[in-house]
Image (cartoon, rainbow, N blue to C red; front, side):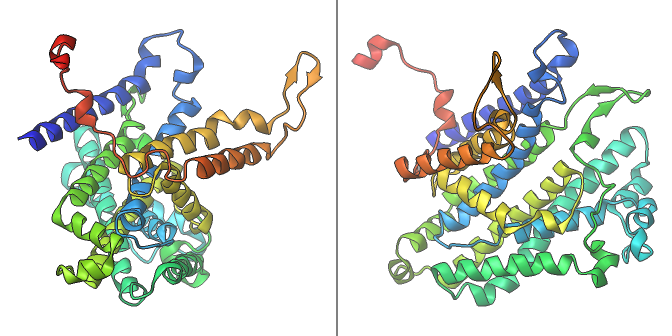
Length: 398
C-alpha cells in the first residue's frame, strides 16, 4: 500500500513538473515585460532541452555502469545508431533527393511521415497526428536498432572484464562513427554530410492558420520523453531484474551461487541500456535538427560518464541533477568567461576564448576530489516524500 502511494505521489510530481515546463516556456507570450531569460530564444530553454536528452542517456549509462557494474564506453555509438535511424525514417520522401543530392537520392524512399499522412492527412489535426505517430514509432525503432546492435556486440565483449570491456565498446563506437561517414554508404547515411529535414522539437509547437505559434511545446516534448523513459528504468531497477543486476555488481560469485545467470543478466542490462541510449540519440537529433556522425565522438561518451560520476554512480536522481548542473554550467552560466570583461575601465585579466573550459575543469576536479561518491552517492530523492502531508509539530514530538 505504501509503495502504491509513493508511486502515485511520484506520478503527480512528474505531472506537475511537465505542466510547469509548459507554463515556463509560454509565460513570456502572455505576460509582457518579463526578463529576457524567459524569452523563447533564451539560453534557459536551450539548456533545458539538452539537459533533458542528456539526462536520459546518463541514466541509461548508470543502469549499466552503476547498477550492473559493467564499465562500458559505447554510449555515443548507440546514440549515433538511434539518431540515424530516426532521421532516415522520418525525412519526407519529397526531401530525400534534396538531402542526398550528392548521391543521387536515398536508397530508402520509405518515410513513416508520408505513410501516416496518407492515412490521416497532411494538414490540420490529421497532420499533427501523422507527425506524432511517425516520431513516436521512429524513436522506438531507433532504440530497437541500438538494442539489436548491442545484442550482437555483447556476445563477444561481455565476456571481457573491466577495462577491456571499456576499450572494446569504445572501439566499437569509433568504428561505427567511421563507417557511417564512409562515402560508399552515402545513399543510406549521406556519407560525411548531415541528414536534415525531419521533425524536430520545434515541430510540436501549436500554430494558428497564419503560422503564428499559439502554444510552445518544444521544451515539453524532450521532458516528456525523458521522464517516461527514466520512470521505466527506475521500475526496472526496482524489479527482480534490477536486484539481479545489483547482485552482479556487488559480487558475481555470490550472485551466480544464488542462481543468477551472469551472462543473461549482463546481456539484458547491456541491451536495455543501449536501447535507451538509442532513444536518447533520436532525441539528440531532434534537438540539433540534424544527424551527422562526426558529432558522436568519444568526447560525448566522456561527458556522459563524467555526469554519472558527478551525480553518483548508482543514483538515478543524482544523474538527473548532475546533468542539469553540467549542461547549465557548460552552455550558459560560465559563458561570460569566454569574452573580455571590464570593471569600469579596467580589463579583467585571463578572460578570453577558452577560459570557460579551464574554470569548468577545475570545478569538476574539486567535485571529484571532495565528493568522491558524487552529489547523491547511491541515494535517491524520494519524490513522494515531497508531497507527503506532514503531521503537526506537537504530534511529531509525541
